[in-house]
Image (tube, rainbow, N blue to C red; front, side):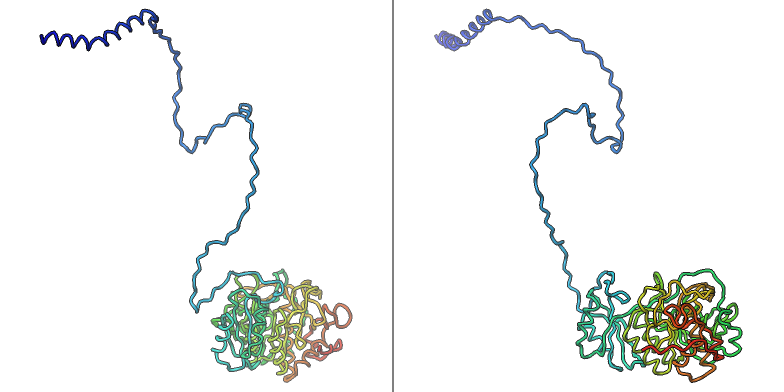
Length: 484
């Protein structure tokens, strides 16, 4: 019985599967599809060449099609976008400096109204004997730095050289210091240049031009003291070994560095041997106020020039040769007045800035003998300054003279003419001791050879220097009137 029940149950359960199988078979008979046939299509054999990869640096970044192969595309016009640039200050880190630190700005060119002046230095005057702390206090109160301070016996005062560390204009600093009761004066620091020029070929024609052989039979400058304010002098040069020469320096450090210009001036006055100086027996005090230049011609400043003038006065110089030129320095002009009052003869070069240049100082000082330069044919030096302040002419073109390091040079410039005039003054003072500077000037002008326009003129002054005539008293032209 159990078997029949189990069989019946299985049959009932199998009925859906049997029904699905019969339905599927019927469907296949009605919509039967033909069997699929697989056809093998032969593939063509393509030979590909072997490609060796190149280094990346030699590969083109991309390959562009030729112009004619480019597809024409319609570009959509992009809207215009205006970009406004906004400048923002850089993010600079602020550093607080200690109280004793002074920031030094980058160098900047001097303004046009400061030509001939140092763009970042002023010079102040204090009463003589003032304590050094006063200068430091003035500097501290005005954001300045003390570069140097010196007592001037000549002017009976103390001068202080101050550096403007923050880039303020010199005139603004002078105005700020003008009301300081601790000062007696404040001014710019003027720049002075030596008045030599480029070397040129030539011989020592000045010996014959000035009749030095005959002149030395009358006087040689013995026992007359001449101060030369210039570069350092090569005292070991063979042309100066027999000279009565002492070298000093007013520059920082005090060590003398021989320079060409100063050695040339000393040689023109007192050389012997291969060349002949105009006053070989004069006593020379060479004061270095122009240091070795880093670039271009040597330069000096108000501070150094004032110290050099003070040293010349302390050494009891009877003649001071100033073969340099610069601006109208008030303190220097005061010092020159004091020296002239104390019977010191002042000689200066007129300058090498050309006929249209403004009068140069110290030559334009009314009590200074301003000397221009001429050549072997008595033609005025083309680069010489001109003007009513020109007093005399002397050889200054193609001048043979000793240089630093045992050399000999041939140079041109009013510097060298001034040296000949200083030596001629020493000859006159030897022959007539105690003569006043005004009298020496009149003798030199009154015995000069008239050149150019008859009488005194702005090119040659009274004419070419003639030391022999000055010693023998042969006057050729009237002595010029003293300038006011």
